[in-house]
Length: 119
Image (tube, rainbow, N blue to C red):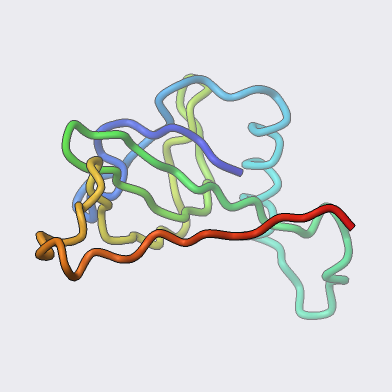
Protein backbone atom coordinates (compact mmCIF):
# COMPACT_ATOMS: atom_id res chain seq x y z
CA UNK A 1 0.00 0.00 0.00
CA UNK A 2 1.08 3.59 -0.46
CA UNK A 3 0.41 6.59 1.75
CA UNK A 4 1.37 10.24 1.74
CA UNK A 5 3.65 10.96 4.69
CA UNK A 6 4.46 14.08 6.64
CA UNK A 7 7.68 16.11 6.38
CA UNK A 8 9.55 13.58 8.59
CA UNK A 9 9.20 10.82 5.97
CA UNK A 10 12.61 9.52 4.88
CA UNK A 11 14.41 11.20 7.81
CA UNK A 12 16.36 8.56 9.80
CA UNK A 13 16.37 10.76 12.91
CA UNK A 14 12.60 11.32 13.06
CA UNK A 15 9.38 9.33 13.45
CA UNK A 16 7.10 10.06 10.48
CA UNK A 17 3.36 9.67 10.33
CA UNK A 18 0.86 9.61 7.51
CA UNK A 19 -0.37 13.02 6.48
CA UNK A 20 -4.03 12.02 6.53
CA UNK A 21 -6.25 9.81 8.67
CA UNK A 22 -6.58 6.20 7.55
CA UNK A 23 -9.74 4.16 7.29
CA UNK A 24 -10.87 1.23 9.43
CA UNK A 25 -9.32 -1.44 7.15
CA UNK A 26 -5.88 0.16 7.37
CA UNK A 27 -6.17 0.55 11.13
CA UNK A 28 -7.16 -3.14 11.37
CA UNK A 29 -4.11 -4.06 9.27
CA UNK A 30 -1.89 -2.17 11.74
CA UNK A 31 -3.56 -4.06 14.59
CA UNK A 32 -2.78 -7.31 12.77
CA UNK A 33 0.86 -6.21 12.40
CA UNK A 34 1.05 -5.71 16.17
CA UNK A 35 -0.39 -9.19 16.76
CA UNK A 36 2.12 -10.70 14.33
CA UNK A 37 4.96 -8.91 16.10
CA UNK A 38 3.90 -10.36 19.45
CA UNK A 39 2.70 -13.84 18.59
CA UNK A 40 4.20 -15.13 15.34
CA UNK A 41 4.95 -18.82 15.67
CA UNK A 42 7.42 -20.72 13.46
CA UNK A 43 4.75 -23.23 12.39
CA UNK A 44 2.27 -20.50 11.37
CA UNK A 45 0.85 -21.02 7.88
CA UNK A 46 2.30 -18.28 5.59
CA UNK A 47 -0.85 -18.48 3.44
CA UNK A 48 -3.04 -17.45 6.40
CA UNK A 49 -4.48 -14.05 5.42
CA UNK A 50 -4.32 -12.93 9.05
CA UNK A 51 -0.62 -13.78 9.19
CA UNK A 52 0.33 -11.31 6.44
CA UNK A 53 2.15 -8.17 7.52
CA UNK A 54 1.05 -4.94 5.81
CA UNK A 55 3.94 -2.72 4.69
CA UNK A 56 3.44 0.88 3.58
CA UNK A 57 5.35 2.78 0.90
CA UNK A 58 5.33 6.13 2.67
CA UNK A 59 6.33 9.13 0.55
CA UNK A 60 6.60 12.89 0.99
CA UNK A 61 6.71 15.48 -1.81
CA UNK A 62 9.18 18.13 -0.69
CA UNK A 63 9.89 21.32 -2.61
CA UNK A 64 13.09 19.98 -4.19
CA UNK A 65 12.90 16.23 -3.62
CA UNK A 66 10.67 13.22 -3.07
CA UNK A 67 11.52 11.26 0.08
CA UNK A 68 10.19 7.75 0.53
CA UNK A 69 10.54 4.67 2.68
CA UNK A 70 9.08 1.19 2.99
CA UNK A 71 7.82 0.80 6.54
CA UNK A 72 5.97 -1.67 8.74
CA UNK A 73 3.39 0.22 10.84
CA UNK A 74 2.59 -0.97 14.37
CA UNK A 75 0.99 2.11 15.99
CA UNK A 76 -1.54 4.82 15.23
CA UNK A 77 -2.24 8.23 16.74
CA UNK A 78 -5.54 9.94 16.02
CA UNK A 79 -6.20 7.74 12.97
CA UNK A 80 -2.76 8.33 11.45
CA UNK A 81 -0.03 5.70 11.19
CA UNK A 82 2.68 6.87 13.56
CA UNK A 83 4.75 3.97 14.93
CA UNK A 84 6.98 1.64 12.94
CA UNK A 85 8.55 -1.72 13.68
CA UNK A 86 10.92 -1.40 10.75
CA UNK A 87 11.75 1.37 8.27
CA UNK A 88 13.71 0.91 5.05
CA UNK A 89 14.81 4.35 3.86
CA UNK A 90 15.67 5.15 0.25
CA UNK A 91 17.77 7.95 -1.21
CA UNK A 92 15.65 11.02 -2.09
CA UNK A 93 14.70 11.63 -5.72
CA UNK A 94 14.93 15.09 -7.29
CA UNK A 95 11.58 16.68 -8.15
CA UNK A 96 12.87 18.00 -11.47
CA UNK A 97 14.21 15.57 -14.07
CA UNK A 98 17.90 15.71 -14.84
CA UNK A 99 18.24 17.03 -18.41
CA UNK A 100 20.75 14.52 -19.82
CA UNK A 101 23.30 15.65 -17.24
CA UNK A 102 24.35 18.63 -19.38
CA UNK A 103 25.47 16.51 -22.32
CA UNK A 104 26.59 18.36 -25.44
CA UNK A 105 23.93 18.22 -28.21
CA UNK A 106 25.87 15.67 -30.27
CA UNK A 107 25.69 13.20 -27.36
CA UNK A 108 21.92 13.47 -26.75
CA UNK A 109 20.14 10.14 -27.08
CA UNK A 110 18.66 9.71 -30.55
CA UNK A 111 14.89 9.69 -31.03
CA UNK A 112 13.46 6.23 -31.40
CA UNK A 113 10.95 5.49 -34.13
CA UNK A 114 8.77 2.42 -33.64
CA UNK A 115 6.77 1.15 -36.57
CA UNK A 116 3.32 -0.04 -35.56
CA UNK A 117 1.38 -1.90 -38.24
CA UNK A 118 -1.89 -3.78 -38.20
CA UNK A 119 -1.74 -7.48 -38.82
